[in-house]
Image 1 (cartoon, rainbow, N blue to C red):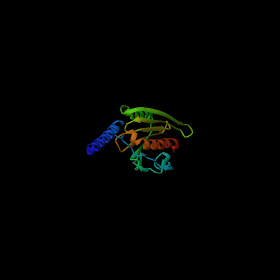
Image 2 (cartoon, rainbow, N blue to C red; image 1 turned 90 degrees about the horizontal axis):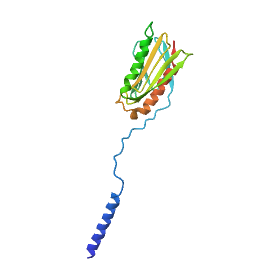
Image 3 (cartoon, one colour; image 1 turned 90 degrees about the vertical axis):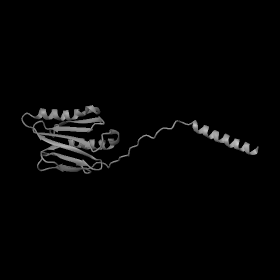
Length: 191
């Protein structure tokens, strides 16, 4: 009889433990996590080519490569990203075409973009006029710009990452490079 009472007591205790555990919240899967990406403060040095009619400051963490005809790439190996800089001289009647092409390139991303913010840039002392575009969402590029002196020079820039566009995961790198692109616009000098 004593054995039956002790088995009943253990069974009752086990039943209480199971009941207490069952009263908790429903189990939920863990959310996806992303690495925290911190980058050092940007330091800039002057990029200048004797063959090209422009100069600007670039981040010392990047690697600049000349692609010929004053087109360059600014690579960020740790961030797996590249800024493509393209230069076109303005001829008698191509400014409208260059402006339209630069704007069309940005607005091709409307399909995947959550929105596009335009920010005008005007520096009359340096004769630098342009537009900076920030593309929200999972578009192939999240930042682009163009600048011109409106008479002789036209320069565009866009950033691309070597990864599937997932803005949440690349946001720290995208923000860092966006600041570098704005710095290119602000430090640009025509020769």
